[in-house]
Every structure is written in C-alpha cells, then in structure tokens.
Image (cartoon, rainbow, N blue to C red; front, top):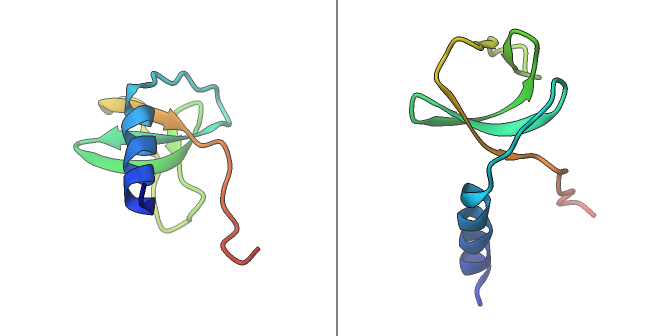
Length: 75
C-alpha cells in the first residue's frame, strides 16, 4: 500500500468518526465548505495564528475530527 493510499484510508476513516470536543481542545472543522484546524473556545473556534479571526459559534460548523498530536518531520 502506498503512502497516498494509507493517507486516504486514514482520512476516510476519520470522516466516519463523530467527534465531540471540549473547550480548549483542537479539532478539524468544516465551515462553508472550507476546512480549518482550530481550538474550541467559549464563543467559537479560536486561531493560534493572530492573522486569522475567531470563527463565531453562530456559524454552521461541522466537526470532522479531533487533533491528537503533531508529527515532527525533523525527527
């Protein structure tokens, strides 16, 4: 199985999982057909990058999954 096929399998599996996140957790969200990785805040989805605004909780937000960690490509 190629790396692409493995990644496709992981993404496909992740789309089947319904994630429930608590305030402070980081997830993958879809808003208006665009995907974001954001932190769940009290008033919406928070960005760790100051260039981007908070996405208000009033938006139509779909949680796709929970971020469990990150990969260090230099390790």
